[in-house]
Every structure is written in C-alpha cells, then in structure tokens.
Length: 167
Image (tube, rainbow, N blue to C red; front, top):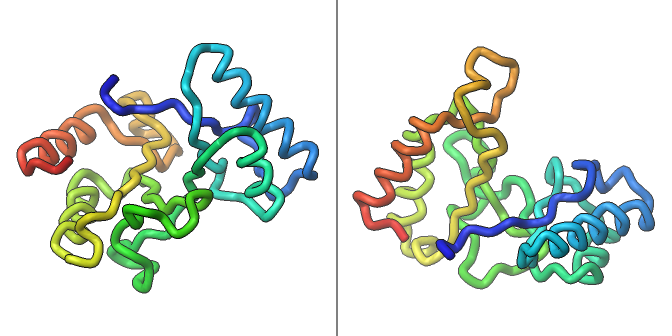
C-alpha cells in the first residue's frame, strides 16, 4: 500500500550469465510463479550479481516481468563519471534499470550526496534513483559482509529525505 514491492530474484540467487537458456528460464519463471502463488503482484526482477545476457532479457519478458533492475550504471563520487546521475523517468531499456548498490563504507552522507547531485542537475532532477540495500540490520557489524546498512543509518537517510521533501 505504501508503494514498496516484492520483485523476482531467481530461485537460488544464480549467476544467470553462467547458465543455459533452459536453466535461466527455470530460475526466473519458477521464482515468479512461486511469488505469485504467495499472493505477491510481481512485475519486476533484479539480476543477481547484476549478471545477465541476451537470453536473460528474452526470458524476463516471457516470464511476465515488465522491468528488471541491473546493478550499477549511476555516476558515483569516484567511478562511472560519464554515467547519468539518475535513471531516466522513461528508461531507455526497462530490462536494464540502473541502480546504486549500497556498500557499508558509504554511509548516509553518500546516499544524500546521490540525491543532491541528481536534484541539483536539471538534466537528472526528474529521474529516479534506485538504491539497493542487500543486507539490513545490526547483526552484520564486525562481520566480513560489506553491503549492510544498520537501522540507524537507514533511519538517518529516510529522515533526511522526509525533511527535504524528497518524493
């Protein structure tokens, strides 16, 4: 009801580009069928590890998805300097939506930087930023996991979004 979604991500978090066509088909379609059977309105997919190929793009549509999130492709503070600052309001390729994969070293200040950079540039201010938070919680602190965000960090970012009227 708040606009959040459950999307497909394969049955086993498989590296799709390493699989045959039929293996990819089973991973993608069977995952969507399972989510639908649980009552979720599943229309979007996220590529595990950001890996895909031409077969994957064909299968995504055959399985009933209308978009898919890739990994990366948005300009950062240190890399992909020629990349856009946000995904287009009408994406060039809905099967390769660009995103920002959160890493623990980023913190809320870097998330705020992404939003501010896009909002302050007329070319990108009407675009969309897709943030990927792969792990969430306090139980990763001190572990080897490098992509977690703590509840306090996420709350700090969400509070900033609310205070700055970011939709």
